[in-house]
Every structure is written in structure tokens, then in C-alpha cells.
Length: 426
Ligand code: SF4
Image (tube, rainbow, N blue to C red; front, top):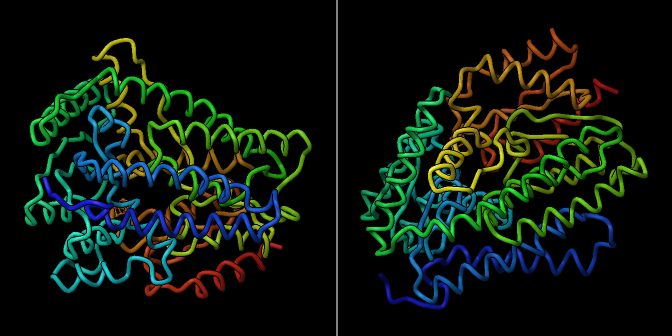
């Protein structure tokens, strides 16, 4: 283990903590309450989470990098600092003026194909720049070719890589198989960092996640109300909470606080928008390199973002009554995790549940960000567009983009497209 201290084993976390703290201070000072409540509340809980990670890295705890498809709370079976490769690239993309672009360029110049997923290219470039001192990195063999093709880079750079084999079929035997894979993966990580997985410690984190899930599910229901009582910023903030605060009290507190505000809005039939004129669903991601877009659609267009791929969950609470049941529940959750579920199953399922959800949420339109990296989703937009038009009579805009790199399609281009599209709706 390295002897560096003062956050220098996780330099991008120092950068993130500084950006989060400055943004939080700015919002507190210049934005009157209750405006931007979701951003304010998210940053409030994100800041201490990042600081805690930096302090633990300074204390010498092992740093475990993970794909977001390996839920971070599972790593709390260890005394460690979990760092999500994809979320770190994208939160920096959101908070720095030029985002993670410098690191995308570093890894591209190193020889990695430019058209792979920027969510991974960011941290890959940071590793080349010696900004992270990972002790081990883990990923399941999902959800996409980018993952299979990109993660071996870390091993090439001398970081031990632990793989868990995620099956495609959603059957009992698959969940049992993946539960074994998770157990083996945790054992392997434990050997590398010199710790035994502590299932009692893990159980407490899973129980926090169970509590949080109840609130998340209630929020999904409340978002169906007309007008929607939730700000569009809830989509990226819930994705950030999902990864950075997984299994932690901060996540539960974030949801509790948001829920109180949303419930009050709902009871009063109020919306945080001045007036809700359009209700939109985003079958894929929001734009991570400029999260202010979520605030812009609320304020400028009166358009609610009711859901995106990270803001609806299909997994259940995990039974924590025994180690075997825990592992089984963990396997099911990981295989039904947002983006993982949709990316590894056949497209008919995605089409039918998305059409149903769009109906349920009473949306007027859909906006599909067709992300450069996501080749496995490249054929979906046109078929989904036809399904939404034929089944519900609603239009879908397709925006070709790299959601983490503004140089592919700038925020002006994205806004122009959305504005023109909404003009056809009103
Ligand atoms: S599924 Fe798409 S966004 Fe997610 S890691 Fe793969 S390429 Fe990136």
C-alpha cells in the first residue's frame, strides 16, 4: 500500500469535494429557499460522504474501484474506500468547467478507442495521470462491451482486477449462480487487501438500503402526480446518491428530507416548476456534462423530467436473515440494477415496460439521449420511438450525444434541439 497521505491517494475525490463544497456554498448564499431544493439537499449529504472517504484513504484503508454495476454497499463488507469508476468520471464532468475532458484525451492518446464510454475513460485517464492509487478494482461482466473492453486496462496498469460473471438469463439458477460469484468475488478481494469479508457489517448497510428503497418507491409513485411534485434535478441527484452514498446513513437522510418536501408539494397539488406545461420521460440518461440542463428545462420550458434510466428501480428489498439469503438478494438486485437490467435483457422487455411506464406517468413526450458509448442500445431508439407513437401517440426526440463530453454535442445544440421539439408539442 502506498505511503502517500492527505487525500493524495484519491486526488479526484479532493477535486470533487472542493467542487461540491463550493457549489453548495454558492447555492446556500445566492439561491432563495425552497428553490433548487434537490441540488441543495444532495450536495449537503454528498460533501460529508466525500470527506469521509478522503479521511479513510488518508488513514490507509484500501481503495477499491468498482463498476457501478457492482453496488458500492457490497464493498462495505470491508473496511475500505469504495470508488465508483463511472460515477467519478461523470460527477467531475458535471462540476468542472471542462469536466473530465483532459482525462478522456489522455486515455485516447494512450491508444484507447475514442468512441468507448466516457464514464470509464475519465478514471482511466486519471490512473494514467497517477491520481488514484487503487488497491484492487472489481466489475461484473456487464452491462456492455465497453466494460469488457475497458477494464482490462486497469490490470495492464498493474491493478488487480476481480471479475464476477453476470449471466444474461433472468432465472432462478442465474440468481443462485451470480450469488456464488459475488461471494467468490468478495473472498478474492479480501485476499488481495488482507481482510475477511464481514457479513455482519454488510448486513447493516443492506438494511439502510432497504429502508431507503421504501422511500424511493414512494417517490416514484408521487412523481406520477399531475403536476409533478418533484424537480427534474432529482434524476441526476438520485443517480449520484445511488452510487456515492450507497449503504450509508447520508443516503437515507437525503431521501427522507426530499420525501418530506415532495409529500408536502403533492398534498398541496404544487410543482416546483412555475407551471408544468410538458411532462417528459427520458428512456436513457440525462446530460451529465451539464446538470444545469435539468434546471433549465424546469425554468425555461416548464417541462418536468419524470424519470430517466437511473431513477426507477426494479429490485426488491434484500432479506438479511441469513448470509445465503443476503447473497441471493444481492445477486438479484445487481442483475436488476438500473442500466444493467435494460442493457442485458432482450429489447422487447425494455420496450413494453417503457411504454407502460410512459402511460403510467402520463407523459407527453420522450427524449432519448443516444450515448456514443452505448453501442448495445444503438438499435433501440427508432424502435422505441415507433412503439411510443403507435401505442400512446406520443413523440420521441433522439439526441445523438456523449453524455459526459460536451465536445460531441454541445449543451447549446442539445438545448436548441429540445426547444425546437417542445415547440412542436405546444
Ligand atoms: S451501458 Fe452505456 S453508459 Fe453504461 S457503462 Fe456501458 S457504455 Fe457506458
